[in-house]
Image 1 (cartoon, rainbow, N blue to C red):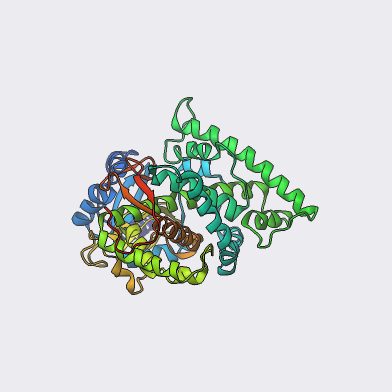
Image 2: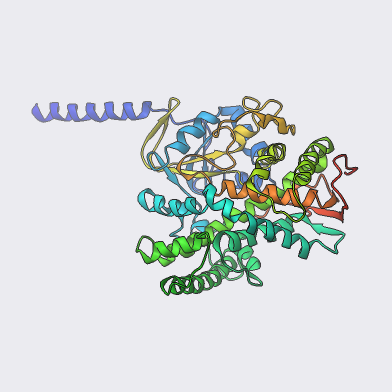
Length: 474
């Protein structure tokens, strides 16, 4: 009888436990086929740059702002909305951690900041933040202006047509290496980095001839080159041969390496990541800003007036200053609105490190969480008439969890202010020195693997003799 009652008690406990566990409701949605899930539909939408229209949007309409799916072999909860962004991004390291595809991790590096947590993350982020603080950026301004002007003088002068997108990529690549890192750009470096980028979202199989295999080979070349640069920098620092007026990021990281705070591998991996994080996203933002200006001549006229006023306030040959940057309020509104409509990345994945309950739903430990910029950027709950181009939206402050091209929480983009300077200085020097028009103002945006203009933003250019606010253009 005792054994019988004990068995009944155990069965009852198990039943109650399962009932409690089963009462926790996971978000609605469909998981699709085993392992494959809905990955193919996700990739198809992403390749066409229609992730919101073809994948996220229809599921939000059917299931609501939070829905489940299965992507790349992992159960995944897709979240939408400012409050969801705030909850998950601000709880980085507590409830979720960054979770990138295997190919991205291998190519960026196992020791880069996107893989770091806790104290190791704070250490590397502190080094980056110090190099991008207001005082550091102000000291960097003359070099930024000179680099951008030199680029226009060598790549634009004498040409009637240029690829604005490719030109911006070459420029932003040089700025990250030379202005932020203090590393001289050598021939073919950009081409080698581009080969790595091709494989970041590929299947991580190293079969000869595949994108990932080519990317892996290019990554090894980059690693070898950067190790030599880091070791030479260390030698110069230890022999007290460095004479930087404002310590650049590579020097900060190498000094931290000498102190034993980070390793040589961490330095190399973080340089690789920062190059990709900074130059591809910024060049696309520049391209999309010019695309929007080409389609909205009245906005361009207002922007040009702002820059004409700045030119008149300066002496001949004077570089821009931080005070000039502060005067570019409308230009930054235009850039922000362009980025809202055309974010350089769609969002990112997190992984639940504990069971999570949010908005009445249960997200089990180990599941992925995907937040997207489209979840707020294209919703009329946050932006009236969201598909229209209206720079005036940004005359008033917008919540960081509504407007999220630079992320949020502990992993918010540390290079936000550098990207802003890059964009604004480039726009100023172009619009005050060139008349320009896009050959294909309505060209489509494709993914390969990040968004790019399908025709490379072919642009007709001609030097102007003076800044004319009411330019006849487009």
